[in-house]
Length: 391
Image (tube, rainbow, N blue to C red; front, side):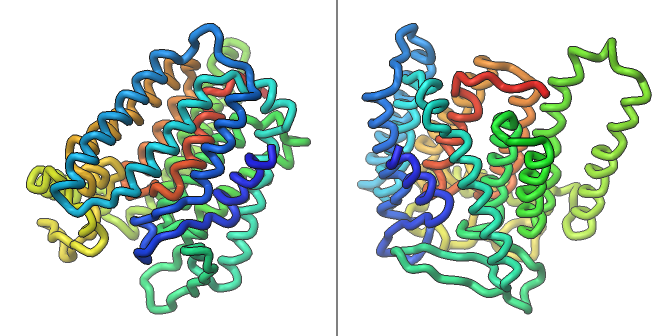
């Protein structure tokens, strides 16, 4: 239990990582990754084993794709300048995820109040981030154990906030995951008012990050949860209650309007051009560009500026670490999506994935430094045996 609390603190309050290269793209030692594997091993020796073979096919598929990912990664290390620590850290995180999948953690999670502690830690982290934002800072770095505050740049074209994440899209991806987790475990809140206030804190975190795409994506989480509640009760619901759908629809239209004022929504803010050229770059550098990532820009036809990444999580993996390694990495996530929907299909589950895929599809929204807590939260969301509430 101590290791689990330390893991939450390392991942959500003091995400320290160490590297000789001053960039979050190239982490060597990630403390949260170490404590995640320690927690997974501790649970392995204390939790109830999955005696019915539940998740066996799922586990073997993920394990196989990780092995293939590592093999291609190792192969291309010898041919291009690759960041070997990437494969090590990714493999550790997914091995911990596999261990969790092989266990029945319901008893221990309930005994030690794991969802409650996770939710409280997330809330503390986001509240502290809001305070930091209003003190005039854009982000906080814990690189090599040194805390560095970055103040707002008054000359920058927008006021954005990324907390301890490298980019605002990564902060928003974490907040979307947190919203889904809060809705999934809404029964642990002492009252409905506390639940609504907590969700409002997360939404405000997205707002100050200046990421309207994430605000729009969050609507799919709420829409899925509401649909699961309403559909079995349609015959009993009075028609005038459907007027309650007007506020969320208006909110969605407002987000689209705000985005259209700052971005060309028909080209998804230039993403269509970037993705098309990114595919060309990946096909040109099928072995990956390795350690050049982050310092090498490429022009995009139709845009007046160069870009340094593909503005898509999975395309970036292919662009950095080779096309084959990226494809197998994408297959890992596809497997997780399919099995989560197969395990407990609901509009809520579908809404979560639509929301997360919007975030991952629009930016490099997940770095390896954030992978441990992301996989743990995905486990709690989709593969914990705790039943979801319906109120």
